[in-house]
Image 1 (cartoon, rainbow, N blue to C red):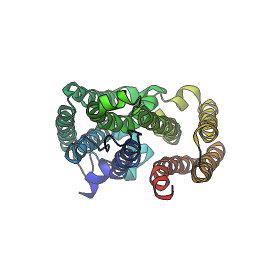
Image 2 (cartoon, helix red, strand yellow):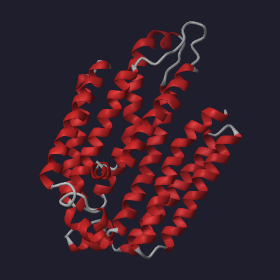
Image 3 (cartoon, rainbow, N blue to C red):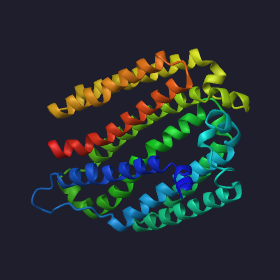
Image 4 (cartoon, rainbow, N blue to C red):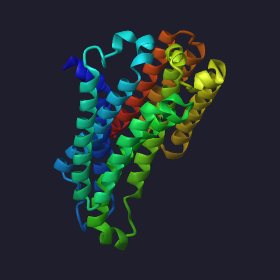
Length: 318
């Protein structure tokens, strides 16, 4: 069981669950309830808790299947980069790993289909089929190419808050459509908030994926992978990543200037996001060994979690 949990990256899956819960209960629900519809109606979530749980299971299952298939095809490189963490072929035989991959995909697509039927858009289930296929091709092909594999992973991370928002907002729009139109209101601000979190997740995940490629440079090169640091060299890759750090810091400053209206948000974005990003960029610039790059990767994950906790803490203190 311990090997299985490590294989499916249970900590990362817990972050996915947290993300989806934060979007539902920290963004969609409070913002929908505050939508100015006068005394006409009290806005309530229309996507049931049962179907939300199915959506979470679908997302987590597809992600778990992706982690399994990635490890399945990366055994050789991982034996050089991090032999102590290799599970497929050691504690879990390869055939069983492949079987688990298909089981998780089947569960994910089934639950995603039920959730899609619940919002009246069964064809949305194709999203889960597409992501499952994309993760397969990422593991077999795209992960070996410079940048494209990094972009795919970052985009999939960014999709988590957006998928949650879409499945929540479609039933809300359907239920309150005519009232919203009559009062010239919409739930668009909710979508914009979720989109902002998706952009945040994309930028930091993309940086983290490239940092991990530098960390795994030796094993990737030995087994013929053509990642960005192998293709352009570590020096040039570090310049690109530092540029991404700069974009992230500028984006946080822009958010503070244009969208932050209260002291808590200003302080939180500054102290929990901007300052740690600057520190992470400094550590990255100075990093030389795989261990040092691993520390940078860990710092980026903590910043991503801090971004999620912002919503929770903002609802508590404001």
